[in-house]
Length: 354
Figure 1: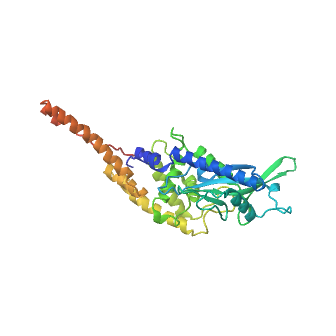
Figure 2: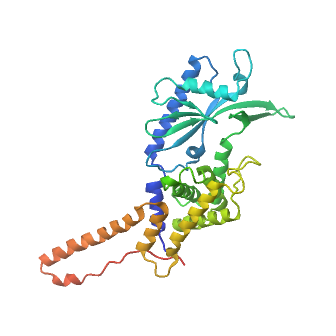
Figure 3: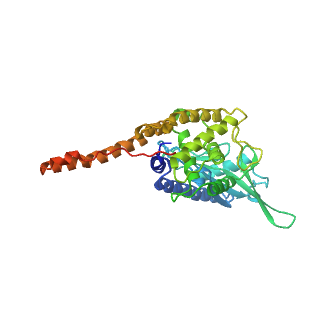
């Protein structure tokens, strides 16, 4: 397989993973939301949250860049169950709890007012992204030994047993146990980001392809590590994902027994992903040709991720090589050293994987 390891790693670092500045801005928005919510709840004499906990791709650090800044930040709000009662002492319904949070956080400063949605309260920002606030209640009981047990329920259509922190913990364990630390973080997380970036690489695919959570679960099932070859780890995992979907389009939830991320045995979004993975693997077949050139290899990676990033690296390298050569030639001619015209020819780099 033609070696584009440095190119794939550079693509990830420059075009896929979120820059630290973006993450810092999101964290500021998240923290401002928390402060706004606490003040709003206090002003309305509603219960204060027990705690907050970031979750989803933001917490797992698998978010990918989006030119429209269409980012979804999940920040769970946890209340003690005993505090979520109405004026007459009755427990708040799941809808009432979400409405309470929406009313508290809507201080009139938003261009688009926060919305109550099925599983959260959504806060929109003009920058393009939004913050989702799933609302939870925590129940503390004691087991037969007198030790405390804490359970969590999400305010959905009803109160539903759930805690997204379990998903974050699951992914961290998978990342640490499966993935070599290459000095640039762990590879499984990077390959997960590449898989999600691939799924978002065409606007026409959005809404038709498997969710980021589904892709994250699929990558952890099929990840093929290669500490020395970022490109090979990415290719082998994409191929293994396609093969896994050929066997079954059903993807189980990693933490909730009996629950699936996909819908049914012929999930349309998983099937669409399988079709696009097939096309990507076909595009990368050129990498295995004995006479594959670096130009061909980079164009193939461009096609997979719908970018010109890879080919632009070849162009930049060519300019870097030709520029000094022309300058040197001119200087030597000016000094009468015409023999320097027989300088060595620079060739494009790029090894192969046996």
